Image 1 (cartoon, one colour):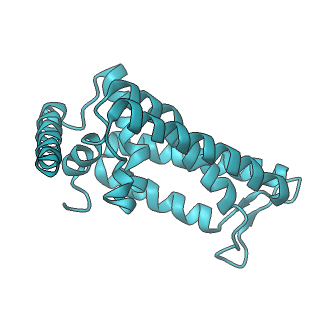
Image 2 (image 1 turned 90 degrees about the vertical axis):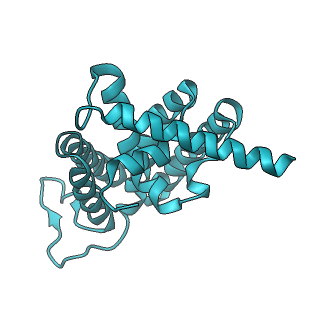
Length: 196
């Protein structure tokens, strides 16, 4: 699978997220995971000597690992699809700014507790979505890096397609749906062979 092959990435991730309730659960809980991860990354050391944007209260935007991961995610999403990727990049940077402000105001001793509670809730609900509704293990068990990198973009594209009929190019949705159906059929066949 090519690094910027949106169709293949979307089909891989979509094969693990075909149940509408599970998709809705992911739409609600994936971005908070990214946001709260950014809260924790706020407390990593700066990457540059002069890395804080000064404001009246001493600055809260620090060019640290949270910023670095935001840049990587943003460029990757734009590389996958210019329009939806630009929106995703904007949302990633909003998460970085918002999470930095929250982390700055909470301080580390309270922030990690908020992050822990949020992460436990978000992951638990998603695992329930997979176990109860999807009846398939999450994608992260088969491809950890791909699942973490694609999850926010996948749910954004799902929302854009569901609410606005957006497609990165004409016929994208139909091609991906066919690949998802083929992937699910292959998975069910393998599962059936293991049982018999």
